[in-house]
Image: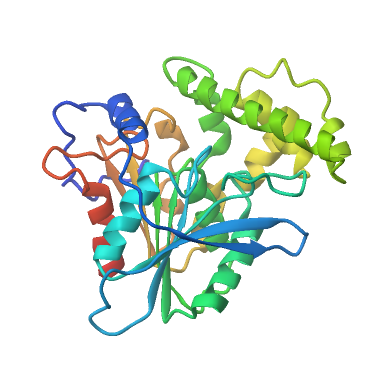
Length: 329
Protein backbone atom coordinates (compact mmCIF):
# COMPACT_ATOMS: atom_id res chain seq x y z
CA UNK A 1 0.00 0.00 0.00
CA UNK A 2 1.37 3.40 -0.97
CA UNK A 3 1.06 6.27 1.50
CA UNK A 4 -1.91 8.59 1.11
CA UNK A 5 -1.51 12.20 0.12
CA UNK A 6 -1.25 14.25 3.28
CA UNK A 7 -0.89 17.70 1.72
CA UNK A 8 -3.37 18.77 -0.96
CA UNK A 9 -2.59 22.46 -1.19
CA UNK A 10 -0.25 22.30 -4.19
CA UNK A 11 -1.89 23.17 -7.48
CA UNK A 12 0.36 23.48 -10.54
CA UNK A 13 0.43 26.58 -12.68
CA UNK A 14 -1.99 26.17 -15.57
CA UNK A 15 0.87 26.49 -18.07
CA UNK A 16 2.82 23.74 -16.25
CA UNK A 17 0.12 21.10 -15.88
CA UNK A 18 2.18 17.91 -15.64
CA UNK A 19 5.46 16.47 -14.41
CA UNK A 20 7.68 17.12 -17.41
CA UNK A 21 6.81 20.80 -17.72
CA UNK A 22 7.20 21.30 -13.96
CA UNK A 23 10.60 19.61 -14.03
CA UNK A 24 11.92 21.48 -17.06
CA UNK A 25 10.65 24.87 -15.89
CA UNK A 26 12.55 24.56 -12.64
CA UNK A 27 15.65 23.53 -14.57
CA UNK A 28 15.65 26.25 -17.22
CA UNK A 29 13.82 29.20 -15.62
CA UNK A 30 16.84 29.93 -13.46
CA UNK A 31 16.97 31.99 -10.30
CA UNK A 32 18.40 35.33 -9.26
CA UNK A 33 21.98 34.91 -8.00
CA UNK A 34 22.84 35.48 -4.37
CA UNK A 35 26.10 36.74 -2.87
CA UNK A 36 27.67 33.60 -1.48
CA UNK A 37 30.66 33.50 0.81
CA UNK A 38 32.69 30.39 0.03
CA UNK A 39 34.65 28.25 2.47
CA UNK A 40 36.69 25.16 1.68
CA UNK A 41 36.46 22.18 4.00
CA UNK A 42 39.61 20.05 3.95
CA UNK A 43 38.74 16.35 4.24
CA UNK A 44 40.63 13.66 6.10
CA UNK A 45 41.49 11.81 2.87
CA UNK A 46 43.27 14.86 1.42
CA UNK A 47 40.36 16.01 -0.73
CA UNK A 48 38.14 19.05 -0.20
CA UNK A 49 34.52 20.14 -0.40
CA UNK A 50 33.43 23.74 -0.97
CA UNK A 51 30.46 25.20 0.91
CA UNK A 52 28.66 28.44 0.08
CA UNK A 53 27.11 30.59 2.81
CA UNK A 54 24.32 33.16 2.79
CA UNK A 55 23.60 35.09 5.98
CA UNK A 56 20.16 35.97 7.24
CA UNK A 57 19.01 39.41 6.11
CA UNK A 58 17.37 39.98 9.49
CA UNK A 59 17.88 38.62 12.99
CA UNK A 60 15.82 35.70 14.25
CA UNK A 61 12.96 36.95 16.44
CA UNK A 62 14.14 34.82 19.36
CA UNK A 63 17.77 35.77 18.88
CA UNK A 64 18.68 32.20 17.96
CA UNK A 65 21.55 31.24 15.65
CA UNK A 66 19.60 28.90 13.40
CA UNK A 67 21.33 27.41 10.36
CA UNK A 68 19.94 25.49 7.38
CA UNK A 69 22.26 23.10 5.53
CA UNK A 70 21.43 22.35 1.87
CA UNK A 71 22.39 19.45 -0.42
CA UNK A 72 21.96 19.64 -4.20
CA UNK A 73 21.03 16.96 -6.71
CA UNK A 74 22.78 15.04 -9.48
CA UNK A 75 24.84 17.31 -11.76
CA UNK A 76 23.87 20.24 -9.55
CA UNK A 77 25.73 22.67 -7.30
CA UNK A 78 25.17 25.57 -4.94
CA UNK A 79 24.28 27.57 -8.07
CA UNK A 80 21.32 25.35 -8.95
CA UNK A 81 18.10 27.36 -9.15
CA UNK A 82 16.35 25.42 -6.39
CA UNK A 83 19.27 26.03 -4.01
CA UNK A 84 19.40 29.76 -4.77
CA UNK A 85 15.62 30.15 -4.47
CA UNK A 86 15.54 28.48 -1.06
CA UNK A 87 18.57 30.36 0.25
CA UNK A 88 16.93 33.65 -0.71
CA UNK A 89 13.70 32.73 1.10
CA UNK A 90 15.62 31.51 4.14
CA UNK A 91 17.60 34.75 4.34
CA UNK A 92 14.41 36.79 4.25
CA UNK A 93 12.95 34.54 6.93
CA UNK A 94 15.81 35.06 9.37
CA UNK A 95 17.82 31.91 8.63
CA UNK A 96 21.46 31.72 7.64
CA UNK A 97 22.17 28.88 5.24
CA UNK A 98 25.07 26.96 3.78
CA UNK A 99 25.00 24.88 0.60
CA UNK A 100 27.37 21.94 0.28
CA UNK A 101 28.89 21.27 -3.13
CA UNK A 102 29.58 17.55 -3.48
CA UNK A 103 33.12 16.60 -4.56
CA UNK A 104 33.95 18.12 -7.92
CA UNK A 105 30.73 20.15 -8.15
CA UNK A 106 31.94 23.58 -7.05
CA UNK A 107 33.70 24.46 -10.30
CA UNK A 108 37.09 23.17 -9.15
CA UNK A 109 38.25 19.60 -9.76
CA UNK A 110 38.55 17.64 -6.55
CA UNK A 111 41.94 16.11 -5.76
CA UNK A 112 41.07 12.45 -5.37
CA UNK A 113 39.85 9.91 -7.91
CA UNK A 114 36.55 9.41 -6.11
CA UNK A 115 33.66 11.72 -6.87
CA UNK A 116 30.17 11.76 -5.35
CA UNK A 117 27.18 9.46 -5.50
CA UNK A 118 23.81 8.85 -3.86
CA UNK A 119 25.27 7.34 -0.70
CA UNK A 120 28.10 9.68 0.35
CA UNK A 121 26.83 10.10 3.91
CA UNK A 122 30.40 10.02 5.25
CA UNK A 123 31.17 13.20 3.31
CA UNK A 124 28.03 14.80 4.72
CA UNK A 125 29.07 13.82 8.23
CA UNK A 126 32.55 15.30 7.85
CA UNK A 127 31.40 18.55 6.26
CA UNK A 128 28.49 19.01 8.65
CA UNK A 129 30.80 18.58 11.63
CA UNK A 130 33.15 21.23 10.20
CA UNK A 131 30.28 23.63 9.54
CA UNK A 132 28.86 23.22 13.04
CA UNK A 133 32.33 23.81 14.47
CA UNK A 134 32.69 27.02 12.44
CA UNK A 135 29.24 28.54 12.88
CA UNK A 136 28.29 27.04 16.26
CA UNK A 137 24.55 27.28 15.61
CA UNK A 138 21.95 26.84 18.32
CA UNK A 139 20.14 24.52 15.93
CA UNK A 140 20.57 23.21 12.41
CA UNK A 141 18.06 21.90 9.89
CA UNK A 142 18.89 20.08 6.67
CA UNK A 143 17.27 20.17 3.23
CA UNK A 144 18.20 17.83 0.41
CA UNK A 145 17.05 17.62 -3.19
CA UNK A 146 16.96 14.47 -5.34
CA UNK A 147 20.38 12.76 -4.99
CA UNK A 148 21.14 15.09 -2.08
CA UNK A 149 17.85 14.06 -0.46
CA UNK A 150 18.85 10.40 -0.70
CA UNK A 151 22.22 11.17 0.91
CA UNK A 152 20.46 13.13 3.66
CA UNK A 153 17.94 10.39 4.49
CA UNK A 154 20.64 7.72 4.48
CA UNK A 155 22.69 9.83 6.90
CA UNK A 156 19.69 10.41 9.16
CA UNK A 157 18.84 6.71 9.22
CA UNK A 158 22.37 5.66 10.10
CA UNK A 159 21.95 6.99 13.63
CA UNK A 160 24.53 9.76 13.47
CA UNK A 161 25.03 12.48 16.09
CA UNK A 162 21.80 14.48 16.11
CA UNK A 163 22.84 16.80 18.95
CA UNK A 164 21.91 20.07 17.22
CA UNK A 165 19.71 18.74 14.41
CA UNK A 166 16.26 20.30 14.50
CA UNK A 167 14.40 19.19 11.36
CA UNK A 168 15.00 17.77 7.89
CA UNK A 169 13.30 18.04 4.51
CA UNK A 170 13.86 15.75 1.53
CA UNK A 171 12.49 16.80 -1.87
CA UNK A 172 11.97 14.43 -4.81
CA UNK A 173 13.98 11.60 -3.28
CA UNK A 174 14.95 8.58 -5.44
CA UNK A 175 14.29 6.25 -2.49
CA UNK A 176 14.91 3.06 -4.49
CA UNK A 177 17.88 3.73 -6.74
CA UNK A 178 17.62 0.61 -8.88
CA UNK A 179 14.01 1.30 -9.87
CA UNK A 180 14.80 4.93 -10.65
CA UNK A 181 17.77 3.91 -12.79
CA UNK A 182 15.59 1.43 -14.67
CA UNK A 183 12.91 4.07 -15.21
CA UNK A 184 15.40 6.21 -17.12
CA UNK A 185 15.96 3.45 -19.67
CA UNK A 186 12.60 3.78 -21.39
CA UNK A 187 9.87 6.19 -22.43
CA UNK A 188 10.22 9.93 -22.10
CA UNK A 189 12.26 9.46 -18.93
CA UNK A 190 15.03 8.10 -21.16
CA UNK A 191 15.65 11.69 -22.27
CA UNK A 192 16.49 12.68 -18.71
CA UNK A 193 18.71 9.64 -18.34
CA UNK A 194 20.56 10.55 -21.52
CA UNK A 195 21.12 14.11 -20.33
CA UNK A 196 22.54 13.02 -16.98
CA UNK A 197 24.71 10.33 -18.59
CA UNK A 198 26.26 12.76 -21.05
CA UNK A 199 26.98 15.27 -18.29
CA UNK A 200 28.52 12.69 -15.98
CA UNK A 201 30.60 11.08 -18.71
CA UNK A 202 31.85 14.45 -19.96
CA UNK A 203 32.91 15.43 -16.45
CA UNK A 204 34.60 12.08 -15.84
CA UNK A 205 36.60 12.22 -19.07
CA UNK A 206 37.65 15.81 -18.42
CA UNK A 207 38.82 14.86 -14.93
CA UNK A 208 40.73 11.84 -16.17
CA UNK A 209 42.52 13.94 -18.79
CA UNK A 210 43.32 16.66 -16.25
CA UNK A 211 44.72 14.10 -13.81
CA UNK A 212 46.85 12.61 -16.58
CA UNK A 213 48.29 15.95 -17.61
CA UNK A 214 49.00 16.91 -14.00
CA UNK A 215 50.55 13.56 -13.14
CA UNK A 216 48.07 13.23 -10.27
CA UNK A 217 48.66 10.39 -7.82
CA UNK A 218 45.13 9.07 -8.34
CA UNK A 219 45.30 8.97 -12.13
CA UNK A 220 45.92 5.21 -12.21
CA UNK A 221 42.59 4.57 -10.48
CA UNK A 222 40.79 6.49 -13.21
CA UNK A 223 42.86 4.93 -15.98
CA UNK A 224 42.10 1.41 -14.75
CA UNK A 225 38.42 1.94 -15.57
CA UNK A 226 39.41 1.58 -19.20
CA UNK A 227 37.37 2.43 -22.28
CA UNK A 228 34.06 4.03 -21.25
CA UNK A 229 32.95 5.12 -24.72
CA UNK A 230 30.13 2.56 -24.80
CA UNK A 231 28.36 4.01 -21.76
CA UNK A 232 24.88 5.09 -22.84
CA UNK A 233 22.77 5.13 -19.66
CA UNK A 234 22.90 5.92 -15.95
CA UNK A 235 22.90 2.18 -15.29
CA UNK A 236 25.98 1.76 -17.52
CA UNK A 237 27.72 4.69 -15.86
CA UNK A 238 27.06 3.38 -12.36
CA UNK A 239 28.15 -0.12 -13.33
CA UNK A 240 31.34 0.95 -15.12
CA UNK A 241 32.42 4.00 -13.13
CA UNK A 242 30.47 4.81 -9.95
CA UNK A 243 30.58 1.29 -8.49
CA UNK A 244 34.26 0.35 -9.04
CA UNK A 245 35.47 3.85 -8.18
CA UNK A 246 33.72 3.82 -4.82
CA UNK A 247 34.17 0.24 -3.64
CA UNK A 248 30.96 -1.43 -4.82
CA UNK A 249 30.88 -4.72 -6.73
CA UNK A 250 28.57 -3.38 -9.43
CA UNK A 251 25.63 -1.05 -9.94
CA UNK A 252 23.21 -3.43 -8.22
CA UNK A 253 25.43 -3.56 -5.13
CA UNK A 254 25.67 0.24 -5.11
CA UNK A 255 21.91 0.68 -5.47
CA UNK A 256 21.12 -1.84 -2.75
CA UNK A 257 23.56 -0.41 -0.21
CA UNK A 258 22.78 3.26 -0.84
CA UNK A 259 19.01 3.40 -1.42
CA UNK A 260 17.57 5.57 1.35
CA UNK A 261 14.41 3.46 1.54
CA UNK A 262 16.37 0.99 3.70
CA UNK A 263 17.30 3.72 6.19
CA UNK A 264 13.89 5.38 6.67
CA UNK A 265 12.87 3.31 9.74
CA UNK A 266 15.93 4.58 11.64
CA UNK A 267 15.12 8.29 11.30
CA UNK A 268 14.30 9.95 14.63
CA UNK A 269 14.50 13.62 13.61
CA UNK A 270 11.22 15.28 12.50
CA UNK A 271 11.46 14.85 8.73
CA UNK A 272 9.25 15.95 5.84
CA UNK A 273 9.31 14.08 2.53
CA UNK A 274 7.94 16.08 -0.43
CA UNK A 275 7.15 14.02 -3.52
CA UNK A 276 4.96 14.19 -6.64
CA UNK A 277 3.16 11.27 -8.23
CA UNK A 278 3.96 12.62 -11.71
CA UNK A 279 7.72 12.81 -11.09
CA UNK A 280 9.23 11.64 -14.41
CA UNK A 281 12.39 10.33 -12.71
CA UNK A 282 10.88 8.47 -9.76
CA UNK A 283 8.28 5.78 -10.52
CA UNK A 284 5.50 5.14 -7.95
CA UNK A 285 6.98 1.72 -7.18
CA UNK A 286 10.12 3.44 -5.84
CA UNK A 287 8.20 5.21 -3.06
CA UNK A 288 8.13 3.84 0.49
CA UNK A 289 5.20 2.09 2.11
CA UNK A 290 3.76 3.51 5.29
CA UNK A 291 5.33 0.64 7.19
CA UNK A 292 8.78 1.86 6.13
CA UNK A 293 8.36 5.34 7.61
CA UNK A 294 9.39 6.10 11.17
CA UNK A 295 7.03 7.86 13.55
CA UNK A 296 8.96 11.12 13.07
CA UNK A 297 8.64 11.10 9.26
CA UNK A 298 5.81 12.57 7.19
CA UNK A 299 5.34 11.95 3.49
CA UNK A 300 3.46 14.58 1.50
CA UNK A 301 2.64 13.09 -1.88
CA UNK A 302 1.08 15.53 -4.32
CA UNK A 303 -0.58 14.43 -7.55
CA UNK A 304 1.40 17.06 -9.46
CA UNK A 305 4.75 18.76 -9.08
CA UNK A 306 7.26 16.88 -11.24
CA UNK A 307 10.86 16.45 -10.11
CA UNK A 308 11.93 19.35 -7.88
CA UNK A 309 9.25 21.40 -9.60
CA UNK A 310 6.22 22.42 -7.51
CA UNK A 311 5.65 25.69 -9.36
CA UNK A 312 2.20 27.00 -8.55
CA UNK A 313 0.27 29.62 -10.48
CA UNK A 314 -0.71 31.27 -7.23
CA UNK A 315 2.74 31.12 -5.68
CA UNK A 316 5.87 30.52 -7.74
CA UNK A 317 7.75 29.97 -4.47
CA UNK A 318 5.36 27.29 -3.21
CA UNK A 319 8.10 24.74 -2.55
CA UNK A 320 10.34 27.18 -0.72
CA UNK A 321 7.46 28.44 1.41
CA UNK A 322 6.36 24.90 2.25
CA UNK A 323 9.87 24.07 3.42
CA UNK A 324 10.06 27.25 5.49
CA UNK A 325 6.69 26.53 7.15
CA UNK A 326 7.89 23.09 8.18
CA UNK A 327 11.14 24.43 9.60
CA UNK A 328 9.15 26.90 11.71
CA UNK A 329 6.55 24.42 12.99
